[in-house]
Image (cartoon, rainbow, N blue to C red; front, side, top):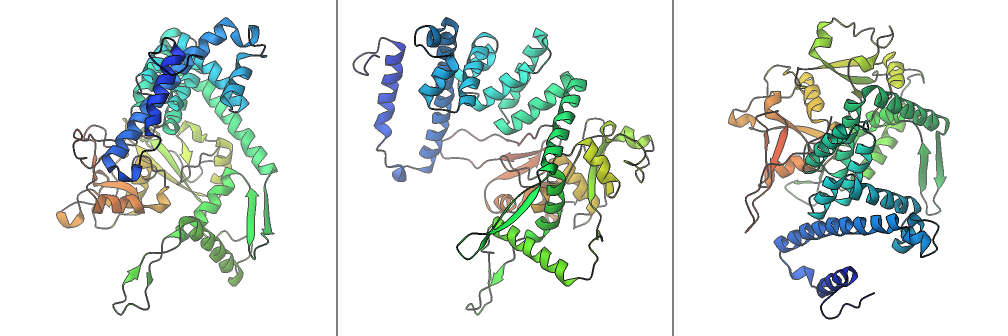
Amino acid sequence: MEQPTGTPTTPAGVVACADRVLAELDETMWVAKTSEELVEAVVVAERLRAHLAALEAAVVAEVHARGVAKGELAWGSTAEWFTHLAGTHRGTGHQTVRHADTLVHERSATHAAMTAGRVSPEQAAVIVDAVDRLPTDATVRQDGEAFLLDAATRLNATDLAKAARHLVEVADPDGAERKTEKELDRQDRAAHHGRFLAIVEDGAGGIRLRGRGTVEDAAAIKAALLPLTKPQPAVDPSDPDGDQLTDPRDHGARLWDALVETCRHALTTDLPPDCHGARPRIAVTTSLEALQEQIDWATLGTTGTDLRTIGAAVTDDGLELTPATIRRMACDADLIPIALGTQGEVLDVGRTSRLVTPAIWRALVCRDRHCAFPGCTRPPVMGHAHHIVHWVDDGVTSLDNLVLLCGHHHRTIHHTPWQVRLNPTDGKPEFLPPQRPGAPPPTWIRKQTPP
């Protein structure tokens, strides 16, 4: 390998020279830098990381095409060689080699976007895998890649994967539905058979809980506990004015306290074990056309009506349930239909009032799903309905003046320069970051939660 001295004459020398330049930052006193410098450094570093990943993909693809690892270095395969060289997991090594070959020879647009730093390596991996699941028609795959590259400008890798799944479902609805339902059913059965709960002493005067169950179990547990995790401000007894203090418990501690309180409540009541109390609720999102077909919601799930023909059904905190599970829960649940318009928009429901009605809250949850702030996935049970134009400023309590925010981001919007609005075209929440000194004017951004 060429040493990083003088003018580099080989690819390895160029990379080594870049590494030597970066080494000048190793002893940087970051505490002395401004916030703007820190943020900009991270932005450029991420762009460089993507560029390096694109460069490595091109080299690895060529190494694989020539059979260098096996023919010249005596490794069993290119993947084995790369896994050892990178010190990574075997699965990751095999994926890197496979993706490198695909990026260079088939997904050149994604490879170019990585080189330019517009797409992260994680986003590129999502795109490669998603396009590979599309029908083999070249035009379909090219259009799918272009769609996902555009979505990657607004979505992180997690949300891009959701958009990719939706793209595959649209391109091959029957195959995607069969595969998804089969996999979810398999996972549900495996989780049910492997369910357990263990309460063991930790040897330090406390206990530890370990357990496993189904998504349906999680929906019931969360529905019971999350409403009890609301922070409870305390009063400082040493303060003569009685000022309130913030709840010192983090979310995990509040969740534990909710579990203990629920168990104590069960012990102090005379309710028989088979008493349900409030029945579970399932939010069923449907179209206006489906409602106009006069569906019998009272018997839905018990008369053979397939929920999949009506719309997706998920819990309030976003847990996906299989159709079989939904039909089973529907036998003993309150089904709450939420009507959508022809463009997928939530129909405005409820009357104007200062407080958000249950109907408007349901519509808000259906539209925003969880905290709408970019990067936040806190569920609706931890959220607030924020008036974009405040009530005291003549703002109305209707869907077109509300956005779902968790407690933290609700305070962010009220007490920082961050702004929020509903996009005038599609009515989805958008946020405007504060203006950074010396930086270009910020643009409106959104979470862009995929369907």
